[in-house]
Image (cartoon, rainbow over all chains, first blue to last red; front, side, top):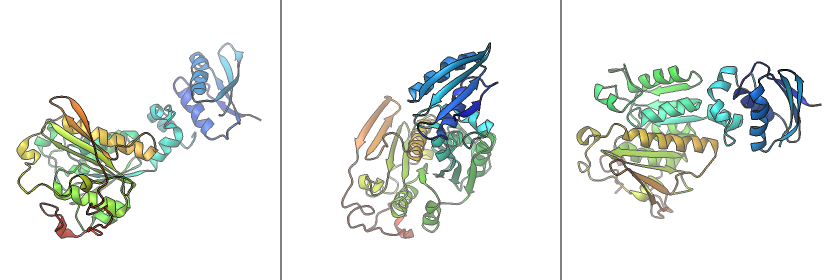
Length: 74
Length: 269
C-alpha cells in the first residue's frame, strides 16, 4: 500500500520540495503516490526526483488538471 | 507539517532542501546546531547574517563593544543602532531576518575564565575577533575543548581564513606560534580597512561552518587562504601539523587556559 501525498493547490518548486520531504520519511523501496494539479510539476518533479536517484513508476492523468505520480524511493 | 517543517519553514529553506547535499535532513541538522560567534564586528556581521539566514538554530554572540558610526562602513547588520551593544544589535537583526533562530548574547569580553565553559556549549566556534590576544585564546581553548574553529582575520586589503579541527589537523599556533611583538601590527582603527573585505572573509567562514555542520565537502583544514583584494588573488598556503606546537603538539606546554599567556604577545615562555 503506497503512501499518499496530496499536493493539489501547490506550485513549483514546492511541489518537489514537499515530495522530497515526504520521501525522506520513507524507507528505501517504499512507494509514494503524489497528486498534483499544477501542470509544470508533472514534468519538473519526476525529472528532479530521477536526478536524486528515485524511480518514477508511473504518471497517471486523472482529470483535465489532475495527475498522480507514483515514485519508488531509492 | 511535513518532515518536521511547518509551511513557513518549507518555503524559507526550500533552496536548501532542493539541494541533494542538504535536503530536509541537512536543514534539520542546521536547525539543531549551535554556533558561537566571537565578535559582531566586521567579520561577525556577515557571519551572523548568513548563519541566521541558513537556519543555524542557536547563535551565540559575544561582543562587549557598542555600535559606532565608523563601524557602518562594513558592519552591515548594525544600521540604525549606533550606541547600542553590538551583540544586542546583532540579535535584533537576526530576529528580523529569521525568527527560527535562538540568539544568546554575551555582552562581555571573552577571557581565560569564561572561555572553556562557553565553548563547551557550542558545536563550532567562528572567530571574528580583531586582536591577537583573543585570537590565541580562541585557538587554544578550541584545541583544549576539542571544538572546531573557523579562523578569519583582515588587514587593510588582505584577509586570511582557515578551518581548524583540533587533533585532526594543524591549529593556528602550528603556523603562527605566537603573536607579533606588541605595536608591530597596527589595528584596523589605525591602519584602515576596505569595507567589503570582511564581507568576503566572513562569508568564507560562514561557508565553512555550514559545510562542517552538514558534513559535506572538503573543509579548509591544513590550508590557509590568503586573499588580496587589490590584486584580486586567492592564494592557498599549506599548513602542517607542528609536532612541537605548544598547544596541539606531542608534548603541549599549554594544557589549560591560564590568563597570563594572553597578554600582548601570547608567548608562553
